[in-house]
Amino acid sequence: MSIPYSYSVKKGSICSGDVSIAGVAREYGTPCYVYSHDSFRSRSRNLVESLNTIRSKEVKVFYSMKANPSPVILNWAREAGLHSEVSSMGELEMALAHGFDPTDIILLGPGKSRALIEAAMTHRILGLVVESPREAKIAAELDNGVTRILVRINVEQGIPGLDESMIGGVEKFGINASELGRTLDDLGTVGKDRLGIHYYLGSQILDHETMLKYHTVLLREIAAYSDMIGTVDCGGGFGVPYSDGDTELDLYGFADGFSKLLLSNGLSDKEVWFETGRYVAADCGIFVTTVMDVKKGANGRTTIITDGGMNDFFRIAFMKSDHPIRLINRLGDDHSNETAICGPLCTPLDNFGTSVGLPAGVEEGDLIGIFKAGAYGLSMSPILFLLHSIPKEIAIKDGRVFPVSKNDLTPFGVYSKILSA
Image (cartoon, rainbow, N blue to C red; front, side):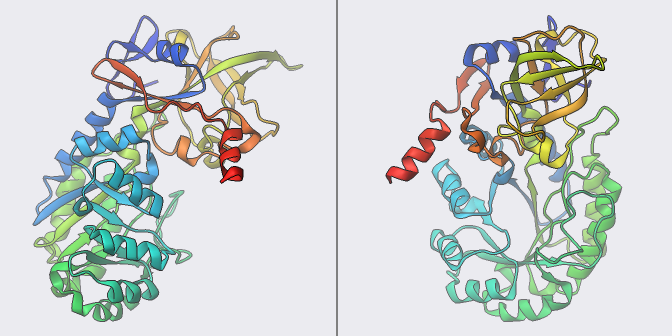
């Protein structure tokens, strides 16, 4: 297994700096998420430095809070010079509460309520992305004279083979490209300096040539309206390798090719925005769960039961994601024994894999680590299902280990607060 960004292996244990992840898990208890600042900082720097080579008026990179809204991750994103992209009232409040200036925040997402659009305008955030004629009409009515208004567009052509393509197909996102001119005309009083266009290709793209192919389609649509806009938000989709067979995305190759696309479409004078969540956050997190039971089936196959399940890390069960999984307290052992890993929930859906390579002789108390867990981990998980304990979040920065929050509130406590409110 390739070691994630800025981690190392020492004495058979995965480490962030000199801090053993297994040691942290034993100290604070499992299940838990452990986040490495070194990894987040390295990924952020790599992305920002490469995108800043794009030849345009200016480049801004926004952290997509949906990937991981943990307070420590938000602080690290702000320290790394990332701006903030939010998609709900709760995310807007979190961004403001954790140090992001309104001029660093953009709001996007389908189905926005009038109250959410009004809150964005009241806070005078940097940008609001409208995804329908209805939202454009509300934004025009509430326009504060400061916030930029971007129109999200969709095209008929999706990206074949991409699990989460956000163009083509059902037009949940944005408006049809054929309606773009009419919508921009309706927002004409906003003015070119505050008017823009937004699009988003999809998630987890690892080939920069594929990215450029579809950016070509969208930028060609936008070029016809160049005289009406000052900003182009090109979304994200920057993928990270999950399997050993995956390759790193060539960011500098992408930046060079994208610069050429801007030039050929007459868009080099625009401010260009990108969004990122997974690329900067995935590698920084490891989900750690303890082996509670080891069982042998009639076929001789081993099944282990862990204290953490899909209620704590839903993405694997839901998306069938290929996250690297290792026994982190015995990382140097041969991981070739096919093992089923199941959580403690009363459903057969609760498993992290039926043929996971682990060492022979897994024992009660061993620690399972699921890598690439810094994005779409805890916040995407149904933590109230079966009312198990809520996973802790632990951070490592500059050799210091600290809990992100006490996390001593149980799901029962959550319900108790709701019922007593």
